[in-house]
Amino acid sequence: MKNIRRSIASVLIVILLLGVFPVKSRASSEIWPGYPGVDELPQINTIPDPFKFFKKSNDPTGDGYVSSPEEWDARREEIKELVQRYWLGYRWPTKPEDVSGKTETVVEPYIVKDIFGTEFNVREEFDKLVANLLEGSVKFKNMIYGDWGPIEGEEEYIFGPADDEEEAIEMAIEAWNTGYYVPYQLWGFWQSYFVFRDYTGTIDSPPPAEVPVTYNTVTVRNPETGAEASFNINVRMPTVTQVVYAWEDYAPSVRDAVYWDDLNIQLPVIIDIGGVMSSHVNTVNEQGYAYISFTPTDIYADDSNASDGVVREFKVTDIRSRARFSISMHIRKPTGYMGKPKFILFHMAVATVGSRKLQETL
Image (cartoon, rainbow, N blue to C red):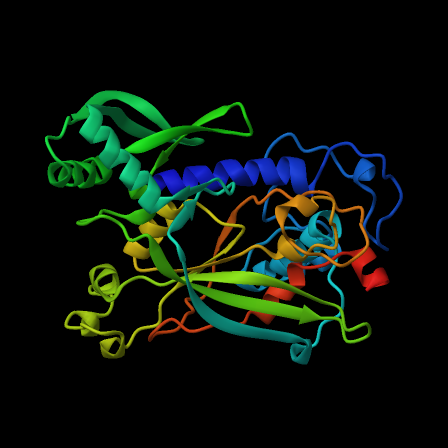
């Protein structure tokens, strides 16, 4: 969990310093009434103080600093406004009836990907490992997880060569569970390592070629023009066993649970805008948390990157950032749902979607 916090903290620094409050920009006039252009904002050389109000007038006590839960509620609303005004762009007015959702499960190739979208076919990579073990030895080192992802350590593991395919499969499973990885480059220059166990968990047999994939799709409609845009919500629930181990001291009634219907507990949920490594999600689930992520930037009005396959039938706007940085937020009051995972529709998600130009052109 310490690595998760460090990674999230590092990303937050990048976002806060480069994304939300840029130091220099050609814009200097007010972008909205009461919101000065970025050139007029104070230069901040460290992480902005989350408890300092942007405007003292938004503080119920008027001193400009959070000192109570009630003031934090006001500060949280202010942060939501700042994210929209200075970063994502402001949403268009949306009523509940203009937001719809659906859930569908389809069978797809077993694909895993890192936070930046680099994809690997799990079964194909496992089969490559088996083939390499039949040809000779497979060597790799232990991974050390730092602030910017895994790096190679000093300890070396050697598997193979295998005498036949059956032995190669057994060795491949053992290597996989030990931390087998493949090196690859991000953006053509950043050396990284894809540790498959971090995304699939440990395995006891060859991974399947295809897996069921559930899509929870939110569609937002502009009632004036009929234009629609959609994004997907990913829901990852902990297993019953994980819930029992994590919460049995807090809620002794869960100790004998075998099925979801046996549980009578409200789970805390982490909402993640963007996405993190599957290994981080696995850790979150192991600690008894549900995990929900979505990328509302998928429905930006900006189609400057049409090659990404996201259809945006809107005019190009001045919003150019397409980076999928991750902001993980713990909900202050435990919330969640029990039972088999079902579709959850977050009307609140719409608060981070859209842009001023989008509002004008839709």
